[in-house]
Image (cartoon, one colour):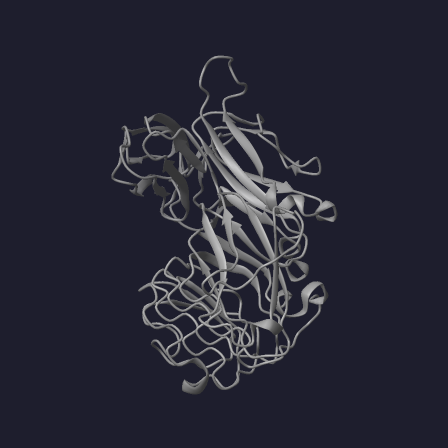
Length: 463
């Protein structure tokens, strides 16, 4: 007989009741057969035992910065062990036997940044994980991401995670769109997924200068006169980036100007701007005099131009920090830019934003597939963290040379080029960028390492 089955007796006469006992299973399911025989008859009894099982009654827990305790229950048909847990937690026990066990977890006060980790529970056949998070000093509730832009690319839908040490409610919004809908308006303590959807067919100019700010409230209601901790979600809507004029969303007060050292051929070059959806105004180049647009935090500035005769649009000069989005060809074709995929010159955008205070160009559209010169386009933009998507498949001589030269904060580049990736097309293009970052490339493309290719120590993702 197998060693994991015990019988209360192995022989007898007449009517007998026999008890069968199995030892705890620490592995896969198993089967054995007990044969009972008499003088003239034989009977087989099949004994089956299920594989070892482990179940934990929670998958996550969130602590506020003040800490606290929570309990979880382990149910197992064999012994269990907690093999790892964060050092900022203490546990009442880290091992146990079969049956039901309660473990108490305690976190102290967090005086630093957000803490995350996992509690890992195993038996000899299974593994369960509890995600734990403690919010940063002074924080009771948070939502990630806390900023989001609804576009056609994400189908007007954003997915968020709410962390709270108690129940929470959506409400008390500062402003919002009537078309916004939520997958849920409240949630339990811990980590909860939240989906927000908006109807982009309503998207007009107002969405560029009008941000939804939703308050995610800790607790089930606001008590008058009592401070209630909240987490805020800032959300914008843009229906189609390719049909959006080149746009600067202003993040700090300052000025925006169009500049050239000499007048030269500027009589044939035109740029117009409008501030916060107002009227279009001509933007004269700054030499000794010209147009400097004064802007404040939250302003939205759109640009269009008529520049298809001469090389180069010249330079923008800025003191205000801003993020950049929309279609770059609005500087060439005015209001008729939608659908344009060609540029009049291989130096159309050379040095265009050099040394400006742009922080992100992730949503800037560069639709020209013949790849004109983007040489030094963002050179010395030391606040820039994310580059625009570079979608051209075949590169031309000089197209990306020094494009992001000395952009010391740049951490994300997506370039889908497949052909002619060499020193003549990308030399010095990522010189002196951030030491660590992410580079997304076409899966079949071959790149060299370093400033003339993909920076050393960057993570590479194939698409």
